[in-house]
Length: 362
Image 1 (cartoon, rainbow, N blue to C red):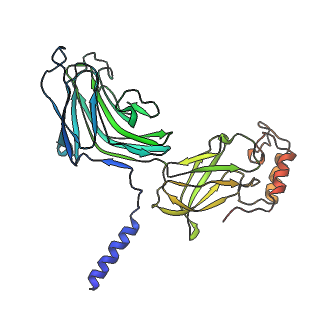
Image 2: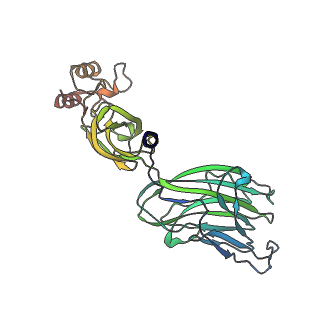
Image 3: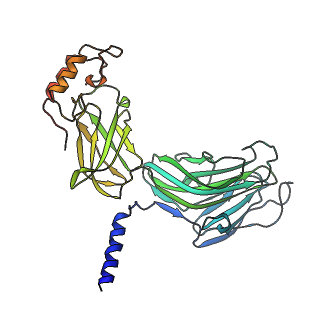
């Protein structure tokens, strides 16, 4: 009994030590139920047409299609064991133009997302000997109502970057980010194409779609009329029970409206307090923020010229030392320009007086 109890304690401890991650929005490892379909072929009118039947084995809930004339394609599910990578993928060949396959619809809210996948691509020498001119592989984020069309209004659409084109690629891991502006149903997919009769093949595996934003929000800089894009905000992730226990810290730029985004924190998924501080503003702590994907908005108090998180006589001394200066002067101190008008004047003195004695959240 003692041994069993000790073993259980050890398992619980390991689970507590392993970082948890938010569940992906969509995954596909190409190992589930499949569908077998026939790719449309032409009747041999083109010398590019192999005029033989091909079939495709795709995930059961994926859609598929092709473009143009002269297309001869075959898709199959193959083992990746010989390539030192476990799992299965779809395997394709293409002759002229392109063929496409895409996931079932996925509801996405406005925001930033990350798509990752493993890709392998090969072909013989392109007919025109121009890298990228004869073979291609593209990833895509497609709007439901647009189907597999090349034109995807309202969606990120098809993209080749960052996949190298017109050359062989061994198993390579790719990660891309994209923005969704309008809530709706979307698909993720791939397009493979060639204009050479020697063809191209591509393998894709372990597709993962997830949110690319760990934390976002808007910071209002108190008593400031300057350009927000010249400022950044330091974001700290705090243990709610002990604010001296800082789990992560990062500085990110502000947008013109004060918006900011943090794309990644190396912290366990959970609820934290978030501390926000900008250069000559005091710290504000936002409590009870869930990571990843949480929001922390705050208005920061101005006047902390020396950066010690309180407005005191030391800040007054720093303002006096820079008083009357503008950028380029020997005594210019950008942190003393509290209102952001690029000169240190009585207006900055007024900001300091209003907030004198204030202390940042602890």
